[in-house]
Length: 144
Image 1 (cartoon, helix red, strand yellow):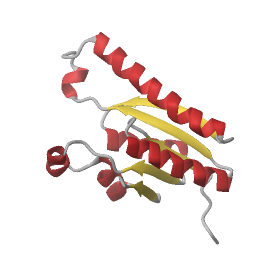
Image 2 (cartoon, rainbow, N blue to C red):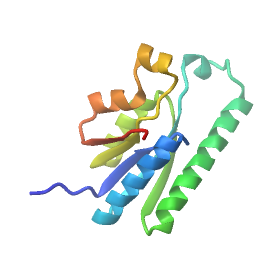
Image 3 (spheres, one colour):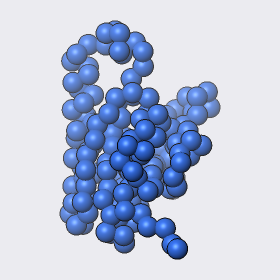
Image 4 (cartoon, rainbow, N blue to C red):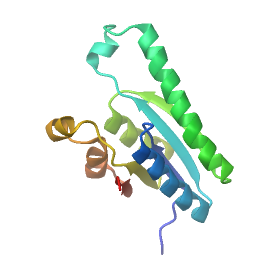
């Protein structure tokens, strides 16, 4: 039996690569009449949780996330795709993996946009971590 992709998780960060991943996610959603959950994760570390960062910064990051979700969601909705939006805080890869389980996603579509090359070398990219630890298929859309 061929797989069906009825629930798609689409993590986005506002980069061109995540926008390209959105096009792939919406294409799959159109083909399967699937629902897409568009996720933006505000990546915070322990300092953030202990109050080193201001409430103003938290609000700015949340507002930026809302704008990213609005832009990507609009693209899907204009193409007749059912889109849900989520903003989460925490470690990006961990929250993506947790939410994929929580919503019962059939596939994760993620851009391979990374942090700086040095950061990717030292800690690995989010997409690499998701691919290594996901329990469902992951489509990684690379920069062209």
